Image (cartoon, rainbow, N blue to C red):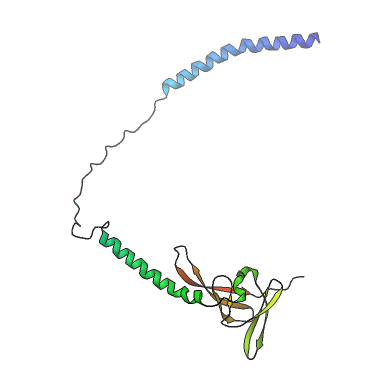
Length: 179
């Protein structure tokens, strides 16, 4: 135990003796490098002279005038009337039973021909419904436009991001039976 103590004291004395001289050398080197280093800064160019221009369109309608606002409001109201015409017939008719469910809750499980016309078999809440051309499905005023062997094509009326009513096509695909 004594030998270990003596060895550790010798090692500490050696480190203390080396520490101050290398620190002085390091400081000296850093000061030399600092003195040699000069920043390279490019001068900023002069700003461009501002030239004001005269307003040459003084005779044209001011964009902030009440006349311009009135024209825009008339245009918007005419567009709202045309958009309302698309959805208005859907609002006054009686809703059908399958319009209470979203399309993703419905499953097309098959089709058949009844009285010479195609009929799709749609399953909703474990109940099977017969769907014909012209019937309505889903919550977006979806009307059956085509019944094919593997899908039912619908025309839906929905609002786009701007709030305008537009038509879009949606389909119900035939689902394979999984066990």
